[in-house]
Length: 401
Image (cartoon, rainbow, N blue to C red):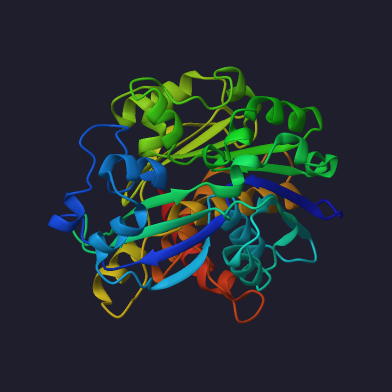
């Protein structure tokens, strides 16, 4: 066991999620703005578009588009969003502050959205002393349209994003202490363009400082629009792969990055790369996981289920007023937390991929029980207490197979 504090530093997408839970993706109101072909700027369930591209697609300002889709434009909730910020908040909520320090590095604009995000994050254990105001652009935000009836009641959402001030956040703004953390995380960098375009150099610097590296991806609409028939770049592939200890993707992202047509083909593609480990989620369907033995114990490509207990609770309890927003981000936070715990408590030859997946599955599934990606605790350890029964049950089931 390591006596010193384990430090986790992350950068990438952070924004405000404005949540609208009355969208219906099969309605005429939604269909008029639905994508006709990849990268055309239209809406698609499970995917993200930029406000500017949607405006071009619809030939009208976004201020007119939103009310046409959902009617009353009053949002149902506003929450902290972003694959980096949400994942790190969740990791910080699972890990005791006495032994772990979790920090986010990024920028806001100078507006009410910035104040809202900062005020909410201050209610969590995450250190945001390096989350700084920058320029006069709007703080990044996403309007999340959620349809809980979609996919046979499993639910789905679509995202309309404004990058805002994140366009101006550069690698030079990351201080040296960022690269002195034990674990360095890059989350949803496709929505922070200058970080994303320099990802390989940042990963290399982290590895030169002996950091463990985690990358969790997001739908890369910028590159999808630029080259709709080409693979999305994830740094300087394949060079970047050997610098990543844990790569986390959903199915769509895995297909686009690998240039394959099925999740099986994508998983096999990543097995052939010089990747230490990867995990591909696929909504309510099976998860694909792999480790070459460099970090976690070696695991040949395997399919693992999501939590049946959580699926059944969601279907049987109609009083649950949650949604699927933030499931993937919380999944990533659970993986990060497990990695940090194993780094502190286990010998380096016994890190367990299944333990990490169990925390990811329990964390992502639990996010369906509340609206938005971030759960605001009333007291320290509250969220851990709610997640851990699902984690323990899931790990027992997976280990028994």
